[in-house]
View 1: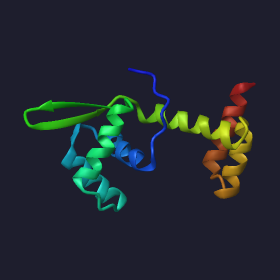
View 2: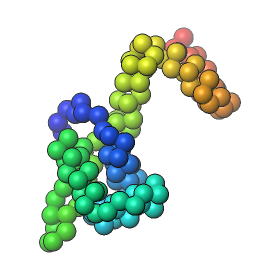
View 3: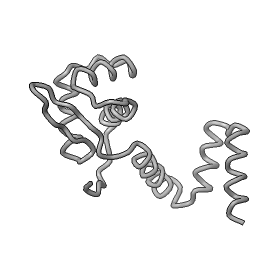
Length: 127
Protein backbone atom coordinates (compact mmCIF):
# COMPACT_ATOMS: atom_id res chain seq x y z
CA UNK A 1 0.00 0.00 0.00
CA UNK A 2 1.27 3.44 -0.88
CA UNK A 3 1.92 5.86 1.95
CA UNK A 4 -0.92 8.35 2.01
CA UNK A 5 -0.60 11.88 3.34
CA UNK A 6 -3.66 13.41 1.70
CA UNK A 7 -6.50 14.35 3.99
CA UNK A 8 -10.05 13.64 2.96
CA UNK A 9 -12.82 16.15 2.49
CA UNK A 10 -15.89 15.79 4.69
CA UNK A 11 -17.82 14.27 1.78
CA UNK A 12 -15.04 11.79 1.06
CA UNK A 13 -15.00 10.83 4.75
CA UNK A 14 -18.73 10.02 4.59
CA UNK A 15 -18.17 7.76 1.59
CA UNK A 16 -15.23 6.07 3.31
CA UNK A 17 -17.23 5.61 6.52
CA UNK A 18 -19.90 3.75 4.55
CA UNK A 19 -17.25 1.52 3.01
CA UNK A 20 -15.50 0.95 6.34
CA UNK A 21 -18.80 0.04 7.99
CA UNK A 22 -19.59 -2.59 5.37
CA UNK A 23 -18.51 -6.18 5.73
CA UNK A 24 -18.50 -6.66 1.96
CA UNK A 25 -17.22 -4.82 -1.07
CA UNK A 26 -19.76 -2.31 -2.32
CA UNK A 27 -20.95 -1.09 -5.70
CA UNK A 28 -21.83 2.48 -6.61
CA UNK A 29 -25.58 1.93 -6.05
CA UNK A 30 -24.86 0.35 -2.64
CA UNK A 31 -22.73 3.32 -1.61
CA UNK A 32 -25.22 5.92 -2.86
CA UNK A 33 -28.04 4.24 -0.94
CA UNK A 34 -26.03 3.86 2.27
CA UNK A 35 -24.68 7.45 2.26
CA UNK A 36 -28.12 8.92 1.58
CA UNK A 37 -29.85 6.81 4.25
CA UNK A 38 -27.14 7.06 6.90
CA UNK A 39 -26.26 10.74 6.53
CA UNK A 40 -29.58 12.13 5.23
CA UNK A 41 -28.06 13.19 1.91
CA UNK A 42 -29.69 13.36 -1.48
CA UNK A 43 -26.59 12.62 -3.52
CA UNK A 44 -26.93 11.34 -7.06
CA UNK A 45 -24.79 8.49 -8.39
CA UNK A 46 -22.67 10.94 -10.42
CA UNK A 47 -21.79 12.86 -7.25
CA UNK A 48 -20.76 9.73 -5.36
CA UNK A 49 -18.89 8.47 -8.42
CA UNK A 50 -16.81 11.67 -8.35
CA UNK A 51 -15.93 11.11 -4.69
CA UNK A 52 -15.05 7.47 -5.39
CA UNK A 53 -12.74 8.48 -8.27
CA UNK A 54 -10.98 10.96 -5.97
CA UNK A 55 -10.60 8.32 -3.26
CA UNK A 56 -9.08 5.90 -5.77
CA UNK A 57 -6.70 8.63 -6.97
CA UNK A 58 -5.73 9.41 -3.35
CA UNK A 59 -5.04 5.68 -2.76
CA UNK A 60 -7.76 5.22 -0.16
CA UNK A 61 -9.75 2.85 -2.37
CA UNK A 62 -9.20 0.20 -4.96
CA UNK A 63 -11.81 -0.45 -7.60
CA UNK A 64 -12.17 -3.48 -9.79
CA UNK A 65 -14.63 -4.57 -12.40
CA UNK A 66 -16.56 -7.81 -12.38
CA UNK A 67 -18.76 -8.05 -15.45
CA UNK A 68 -20.39 -4.67 -15.85
CA UNK A 69 -20.14 -3.75 -12.18
CA UNK A 70 -17.39 -1.88 -10.35
CA UNK A 71 -16.65 -2.84 -6.75
CA UNK A 72 -14.80 -0.73 -4.21
CA UNK A 73 -12.53 -1.89 -1.42
CA UNK A 74 -10.68 0.13 1.19
CA UNK A 75 -6.89 0.34 1.05
CA UNK A 76 -6.69 2.26 4.35
CA UNK A 77 -8.12 0.94 7.60
CA UNK A 78 -10.57 3.16 9.44
CA UNK A 79 -8.51 2.97 12.63
CA UNK A 80 -5.35 4.01 10.78
CA UNK A 81 -7.10 7.03 9.26
CA UNK A 82 -8.71 7.97 12.58
CA UNK A 83 -5.40 7.81 14.42
CA UNK A 84 -3.77 10.03 11.78
CA UNK A 85 -6.58 12.60 12.12
CA UNK A 86 -6.20 12.61 15.91
CA UNK A 87 -2.44 13.05 15.56
CA UNK A 88 -3.00 15.97 13.17
CA UNK A 89 -5.50 17.50 15.59
CA UNK A 90 -3.07 17.28 18.50
CA UNK A 91 -0.25 18.78 16.43
CA UNK A 92 -2.28 21.62 14.89
CA UNK A 93 -4.88 22.60 17.50
CA UNK A 94 -3.05 21.66 20.70
CA UNK A 95 0.53 22.55 19.79
CA UNK A 96 1.50 18.89 20.01
CA UNK A 97 0.20 18.62 23.59
CA UNK A 98 -2.25 15.72 24.00
CA UNK A 99 -3.13 16.92 27.51
CA UNK A 100 -4.40 20.20 26.08
CA UNK A 101 -6.50 18.25 23.58
CA UNK A 102 -8.07 16.14 26.34
CA UNK A 103 -8.81 19.28 28.38
CA UNK A 104 -10.42 20.94 25.36
CA UNK A 105 -12.49 17.82 24.73
CA UNK A 106 -13.63 17.83 28.34
CA UNK A 107 -14.63 21.49 28.06
CA UNK A 108 -16.75 20.77 24.97
CA UNK A 109 -18.22 17.49 26.18
CA UNK A 110 -17.65 16.37 29.74
CA UNK A 111 -15.76 13.10 29.85
CA UNK A 112 -17.80 10.13 31.07
CA UNK A 113 -16.64 8.14 34.06
CA UNK A 114 -15.60 5.18 31.88
CA UNK A 115 -13.49 7.54 29.74
CA UNK A 116 -11.82 9.05 32.80
CA UNK A 117 -11.16 5.54 34.13
CA UNK A 118 -9.56 4.59 30.82
CA UNK A 119 -7.31 7.68 30.94
CA UNK A 120 -6.35 6.91 34.55
CA UNK A 121 -5.48 3.34 33.56
CA UNK A 122 -3.34 4.63 30.70
CA UNK A 123 -1.49 6.92 33.11
CA UNK A 124 -1.01 4.10 35.63
CA UNK A 125 0.38 1.86 32.87
CA UNK A 126 3.08 4.48 32.17
CA UNK A 127 4.48 4.19 35.70
